[in-house]
Image (tube, rainbow, N blue to C red; front, side, top):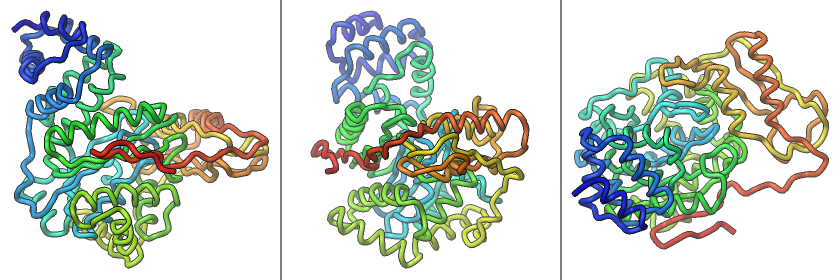
Length: 443
């Protein structure tokens, strides 16, 4: 078997067998296949695509390239949730305790943020003392005890994916649905969950810009789940504006606490309930989505979900007092008001631009080695559809200092808002549900 023959085969649009895909990926990881040949193969995939069997084979090969977590010591059907990234996306902080409060074990491995999208681990580390590095034994025991644990990803999870992604990043082959799908699902499969629910973002603040693209990606990932024996479902959700109002680590933790208290933003609450309902159904804890949503509402209304978050924080060494006193979270010393330049309706918010602004304040990383400031970020005061007057505050920057740089960031936030005379049509938050049965769009 030669790499050049497999490149030629894919260039002609022919499917590769599982053995041929394993030959390419394993050979590349060993250094037997050079970058230029793997780049040629990735470009052939970019233009010719892969069928469901090929994509599943690539996913499994990458999942097996490093550590694979065996969650069998944990009782019950283990669930996991993954988001394709967004601005203000703190759903894991809410969904974890909410689903666990329903009796569904959540054993989650999460990552740190890079660029304008935040990372769950960074947000959790806003809580004083909370540790996200646990031994496997302690991780399993905690899920069995309270139903929830969240830890940082192992450095040796899917090394083949890391190497292939770095190559795709410099060869303009990132935007390939089978390659994206296999990259995401390889990590989820290596993490060991029985059931996987995906939140696929679409819009200005997301990687996928159209609903059709997002549905194609979701379908590819659900198909992979079916091929490898994992129950999988996906929800397509809008990211044309930030989720909720808070962007930044400690600020998002506080908004998550508000949501678990039943006082969170409507969009954030709705998305968390929709994703959680899929997890509860896949786990077998409810027969259908309606029953699952009723069970989840009970956990919110009774305070059980908030109690679960408190227990989770304490179990991982954090100060559970932050649940009742969010003022214990890191606080930025400077507040900078961002005001509207004109009167009218907010017609559009560039979510990505606001994510970049939060990163420039210090809430995110421009490089892997950058140090996070957990206190900084921004809180929106007005969102799409709201009417504003000239000089009215539309956002509040939480900054470490008041200087010319942060003044420029405030101007960038102003630029992210499009204001006009006409009241805009509001896009729905929940767009589609993708399951093994197909794609169903919300009415």
